[in-house]
Length: 335
Image (cartoon, rainbow, N blue to C red; front, side, top):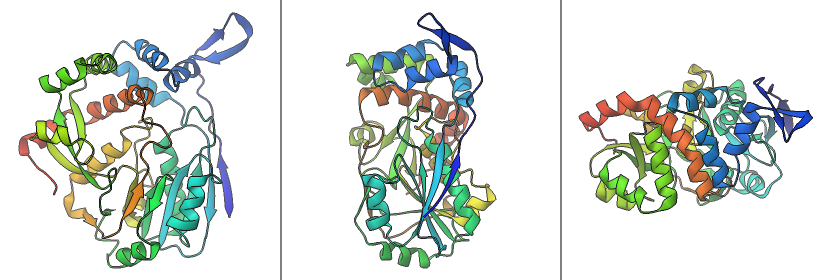
């Protein structure tokens, strides 16, 4: 096992007093981030109230610190296939299952964020692990969440990857689960969605924020949003990476390990990447390997996460506004 650490410098922004205490200070960034990461939906809504428009919100996202991490490696030696896994605790249940069962014997690079890391940034930590992995010049780098479960043996994974020339493809998908390697559809926000959001008070709040931040498009997962696929038959279809993807080492070296846009805050970075890959389908392949996932075991699935996800959806719409319009006009679907 090998360990290296990274400690990033805290953003030096406006100082604000706390509870009239002239000694204890914290930054405006800390104050807003505490609201954003709160488990209380009311705090998260107060966070969004601070920003007058989309541009102010995105500026805050770009200035937000990326948090701390440390690199912990297991089974160094065979480097054709390296697994990168972001995790809260390298000695936790999920991390142990990953190295002792799911990916047993493979070189694993854990990117540990630790407990209470309020500036945790999933995309940034993934990039850090990938940059470490490309130092070993691997053919394939697997990026996996830690909250997965074994279906096929690791030998199946290795055998399938050996069939493929790593210079011919940029990304490899597995057999779809309910969450990863599945088809997703970009659909326009229209009257049907407006009615859906108005029938529940929490959804109404989400709708109001979507309107405030100019959200034009939403995503439907074929497996988990079947009603969406029935209601919205037209859109732009693509394959979603989500919590598990396999990438060519050659491709990752070309982009210097910067796989994800780390302006996203734990929401939307995988969809952003999946859309990028969809533009070049000849560089995509799929293998006959299955791995399962536990949805929401790390970040949860409650209304607080739904509110936090608005920031990611906003930034995704900002980045893809004009491109998606053109793609939907062409009706270019990946099967």
